[in-house]
Length: 469
Image 1 (cartoon, rainbow, N blue to C red):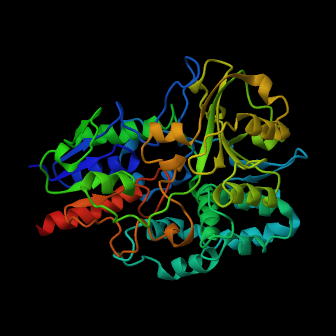
Image 2: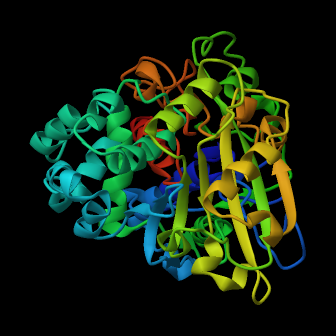
Image 3: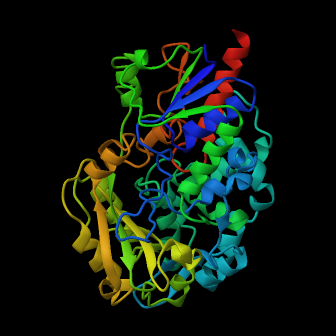
């Protein structure tokens, strides 16, 4: 009998399997698709030689993950590549605010009235970032914080809605960039703890950057899979699990799936009925005949570029997708240009480009024209560079990855109390009604992102149980 069976080979499932295998437990992992990866894959979606990331592309939480940093993933081919700027936020007038590795450079891009405000906001946390990141990404309520004072100070700054934090800034440049940081989790700016979201992304950039993985996000998954295999773990692909009886006998089962799928497979009925999914996204992967023609020179040097004219426009777009049930007329967009630092992702002189916008859950329309019109505001002539595009709305994204219910790439709304208490109000969020069944997906703390910490935390709960039995 195996010690553990893991279902789902996304970053969290792979990390959970690795954490158990490196502690001497026998582990087998089962994945429905023909390759491992989940939200960290790389495929030729458009033209031969253009290697795109169908979901996650830039990895501020990956390089800062306590779980990944403790694993020898570089020995298995993972290499982080950094653009000159982690992120840029261009404006219609051709200027830009930036999120640089340097706090001073970032603050200077906001202008003199907000430079000091920004420095006072982030600088107290940077010297203690590693401890802070471990504290708020670790197993909740069952491990004592290593630095409770800093964690409490962070909570005071981050738990209020982002709308309150934005009021600290006097000019629109800083407000717009910070609003864009919050919008990465598709939560309205007025939501509980949304200030913390923006702070985490800013601090992550200053601490270690917002890199891409050389060759694409698949490199992260392949490194985890390679390490797992060397530890003696078995990986089975093309293996869809529809019920627990489909799996071999084991002392524990860990699911990197949505709560909905877990309830169906394990027969938990309405146990997760109160769990809510958030807005979907409409995503376009581009093959380009050269760099994006950004008007702002800073955007040409950045790995990630946020698109939104001002904080009001960003807020309107978020409300449209999450509360009003409509696609925004001027969407907030997150774009990534891996070829800035990884030219091998496309034929010589060409580039891959990645962009998505928020839409209502399950939306069935086509946002291509709206998104490209928005891009043209900041990069005139963009359409002339397009060689091919691959579009994916909520239905297509859910078909590629069953965890993306309704196109929700966070596997659950990051709003209200669910921003922290997921998938249920519980001291032990990785446990389920069955004592041998656990959940480790992004539906559990600390939530969405390619960081493996949900898998790490769930594995900790599993090995404690295995040692007691």
